[in-house]
Image 1 (cartoon, rainbow, N blue to C red):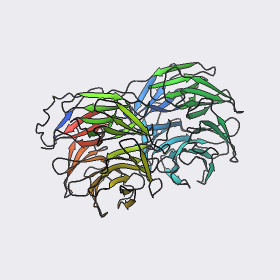
Image 2 (tube, rainbow, N blue to C red; image 1 turned 90 degrees about the vertical axis):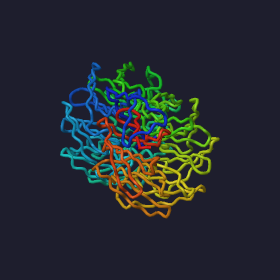
Image 3 (tube, rainbow, N blue to C red; image 1 turned 60 degrees about the horizontal axis):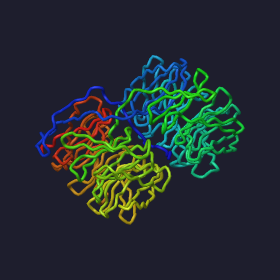
Image 4 (cartoon, one colour; image 1 turned 30 degrees about the horizontal axis):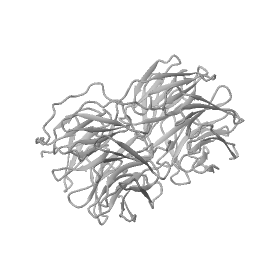
Length: 623
């Protein structure tokens, strides 16, 4: 099942380093010196090519969100890749600019990038924190226009890097793809709003509702007939909208195809990818559809673009390939270099091991304190596991961001999945509640979910629209506390579903992880605010600045030493903060590791994931 990704989210991977550091395993309860690191070998998995576009040099350029690179492939299949300077930026959309360079969005890096034909990269920050820039296209005014999926805005960037943003009238619509229209305006899809938007060069926005409910429009492009054509990921249709806003829809023959990307072909037809149908589709301007199966099963087809060779080129996300289809329907595939499994979050299991999610490898992993690693493939292809926590039933529970489900894995590795009722909810983090159930955040669904051990799910809508709830943890008051990524609040929900929200003092703080501290308060990390926050049960908030600038703290956990420990995504450090607010930072041995999730282990150490190097690492606490 195809869902919108806000992070999400989606979404978020990096290539592993070629060299790994092997360290001798320590006894299970051996005392570890404070701040000492232990690193384990790289995890294996697949990469994640995403967007694709024709460059002015006649080659196809693509984003590799997992490897954090921009790639280039010639018509002969020769591949070159260029690293993006910002670690774990998750490059997404890409398009040719009027200046002879390629421009791309950085979903997690919150930047717009520019790469020359020789591979030189420049990055420009998006003003809105956590905006989630996604789609990008050249406008008729000589600038590049892009969508802000979580920021709910349309952005414009000049060739000199000046950014202007325009808010979309309807809240929480998650603008996704964007393209220039024949009328001199930019047209875009609203995946959560089920509308097609139009924005003029002066920033005036008009929205047109799609007839099919829960259509989830994805890609959009100008057709040869003077209209805009778009895909409906959940509506299973191809749509056409005239410049006057009149919409016509054409059903895709394959049920559950989930059409995704769309592009105009040199043959006067529109070509599109089927995310779940595993086919490339072709539709004439009169609505006649032909489908061509892709040779590799479960490829998860994403972007598509016309090439200089007269063929259509497309992305196979889960198989790590770039595909090419001739106008006669002949398909060829080119494999990219393999990247790491990319561990994201981790938690201690009832078996004394650490369990973690591999969101690119599409697996649940387990590592003992001696460093022995096992992993278990998920049932759903491209599920994107994100959060994980131990349940009261002796199993581990986890979220599947893309598959829109909650998963459960036993200590023997048996996996079951439970679908979330709200479509495109993007479940993100999960934690055990005091009521014997698991509670989770729905980033795109804007809800807090509860699932019993029998798999029964209840959902509670947040008061603030487009809040993008992320982290969640039980509090000492018998309620669940959560962070609102875009709402810039800390939320509290009782076991009966009553919600209270507390605004943060720092604007655009982008709160991430949250956990209960030994002092009876909740502690949280502010990715955008570069602070560690503390909130009492009465809602009083104190913030402590992290010494390292742009440290971007993400994960946070209580340590066995009575302090809170946190990861610094941008600072490449592990931080420790006492109840009095005193912060100590420990540089991670591997440069550019991008530490993410963190949890206390059974050996008295803190364990964390290195997103950029695909490794699991532990740091001593002196206990």
